[in-house]
View (spheres, rainbow, N blue to C red):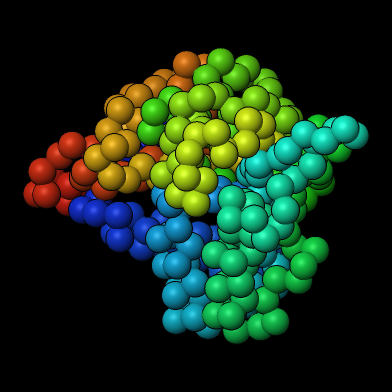
Length: 273
């Protein structure tokens, strides 16, 4: 059922990262105690990176075992070939698979109290059959926590462009021009807009809404102020701003810093609602 998501505003991006990482670490620990897997949906990019680093620190400090954790990728760039689409090379600077390997799985495994996550604990869509990813996630029991981030210029979430249908599943999409512009900041090695791939492989809006047990939208920095206004007040999915899908998710939470929310420091000490 759609509802305006609970919103929490904290002092800065570091406080946001620590808060979100605590919630994830708690979930990982509870799942371990219950003898269950914990599936974490992971975006790549600048916004969630501090959270991943804070989570690795907590895993080390708490002495957490994480061999029961599974990581679900949200998207990746693809290139078109004569035989269809394929992922960009794994070692490419803009490879989301490389980002998750280097910035999520690697640091978590290095911090873990056990052997960490095996290679088969990483779930990722296949460009040759992207629709099958939703079934793979269902078979995994769904996503315990889907981390989400909103594009600053057009509200894209994963690679879902404005106009994406509420019931859309995992698929290959043509990237919106504003999404490609936003990603110049995420991957500065592109150098120019012409170098940014025109297509991406993404989970769908329906994938996020229907397969997540909880969702946390992270919104930080002043450039995300419009994103905060749109997402924190959305009572239902608005296809003009895909990140509003968080309103359709179970146990949804928006966590922002005061720069994104446009509030004074003293106001940021308390939840907005």
